[in-house]
Image (cartoon, rainbow, N blue to C red):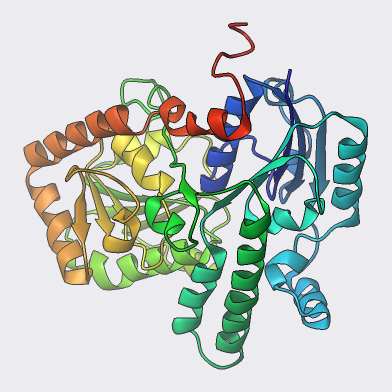
Length: 388
């Protein structure tokens, strides 16, 4: 049986945020075909002890708490002329764990999830797949455009150093993967392996905890200490919500920062972490994704589509999704407001759009089909261990 070393910048389970959803499904796909050894970081102490069903997916499981502060990482990065993103994930325990597993186990392949973990690759070794997910250098270049002063300089530095690192890594691995064709095109020679969606879990017919409240509800979901999500809800709440009458706006997601918490008032609900986002999606009259900066495929949009909700997304949020017209796409605030108001005032059209969106993700975004290329890239049999 093949053995795979899986490196992840964030432990893949539980799959409760965008990056963890992708890494979890990749890991589960590989674990069904090979023996997997996991080395990963955890930002949340709760993730240090995986639930038994998740722990059973992997043979060895090394999870290291990530406690290095942003300030310390920045100082280390400046002192060593490396990107802050790499310094933030540099840890001797992870380095030792990778070296130990490679020395003890007959590893046939290494799967690296997220560019920050590429610093742990051996100089030479097994077949390696680098899943960049998104091109981080492009993300920081976009951040720099909207920043000023020292922040702008640091973002430009990060973009420049990461671009050099990404090209170097891509030049020595066997395959570089991205979450969409648009992202893959930014690094020549790369491949797109798209995200999928678990349509059995995200099914409006599946029982979930109902949301209390009356009247139309507009919902945004996401990790709320992530800058693009923060900017999205600030933009919607300040510039668009005042022009959408008689609705409540729910911001659903863990770790809302101070700016987001300050939005909470009569028409704005800031939930913080919720046990199950499906209840909020099911209660939504419209789900919105007004991101100004977005990379790859937005899981929040796929989840809303799978729950048969009408979705209004910015051009950036919709770019990576092959939605075939089953969501509304708005290029600016005026178009966004018009699209939301149109759906709120025509429930039949909103319901038809949501139904079409669910049919689209069932047909287009099945995880099994999305991850099938990994079998060829890693030399694995498509037959699962259970079937064998």
